[in-house]
Image (cartoon, rainbow, N blue to C red; front, side, top):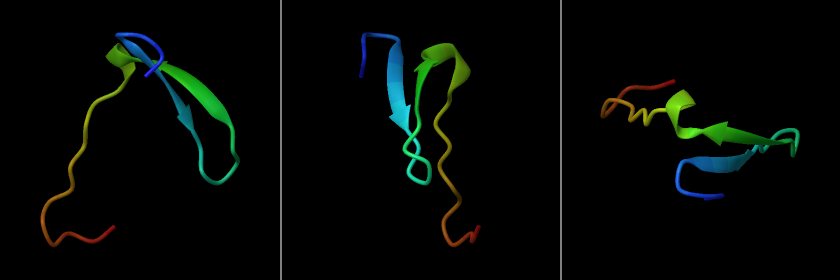
Length: 36
């Protein structure tokens, strides 16, 4: 966590890093047993 409302996210496939503010993200939890 960068500060209280921002974080830095590293992409696993490209190693790019992006800084994201909390207002632009949300937690998504997949349904139990659901496949991609």
